Amino acid sequence: MKNKILTILCLVISLTVFGQASNDCYEIKYLDFFGLDNTEIIKWPESQLNGLLKMDFSNDKGQSEIKTNFIIPMIVYQLKEYHPNCNKDIDTSYFDKISEIYLKIRGIDSTDFLKKSIADKIDFLRSDFYAQVENVAYLPKMTATFDDGPFYGFDYNAQSELKPTKTQKTEFGTLVVSKANDKTILTSKDKTGTIIWQKAITGLSDRNLTELHFAIDPIEYNSVATVVHMYSEGERFTLYLKSDGSFMYYFHSW
Image (cartoon, rainbow, N blue to C red; front, side, top):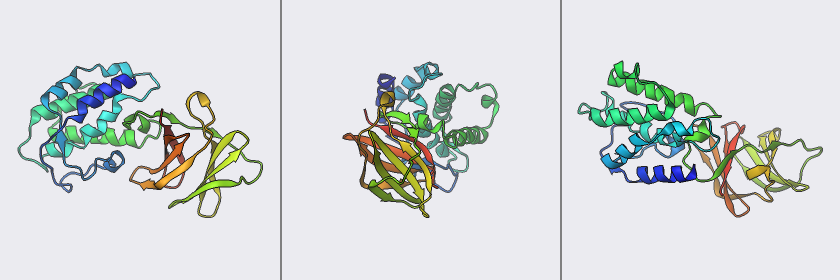
């Protein structure tokens, strides 16, 4: 699967700038989570586009690895360029191709889709994109990363207050790293000090990670998640939380 992701990333890295539609003409939420907000709109050259069209995305279905759905945000952020409110000179051939790629990745039958106007097609793709982003179980599949995961650790119930080894203030409260026997414990607390969740942090094969610390300026806030940049055992560790500090998932570099 990682080889397949590398192949696709090579396909999508070479991109061509083709202008930027006004951000006000058609709203697409959540792009900041993927680093695509306020980014000049780009498109794939014909050769890369044809390469993506030839790929069999159905091979991803039913597997636990990171899926090729990480291409979806790269398609969605281009849609405003083709909306009638944003552009009167629309390249329908390019739009048709990226729409076909989107539907193939999602496994959606195109019969009804092809009957829609271009504005309705864009609304359909945007709604489908929103539904995926708002599904915490589905969101990791849309993240372009070579790191292992997503991981969820194990819920941990301490018999007494754990001694913190590292702490980090956040908008919702505090994150606390502690040690308990051979386990690294991460705790999320609200502003009153009440525990939101507490987990023993593990990696591949449920292996206990031996240490965990915060990066410099570790907290990143966006419209979807609070992202916490950390390190464990010398490798990158990226934690995703809801805005209230609730746990989502994390990745650990391999």
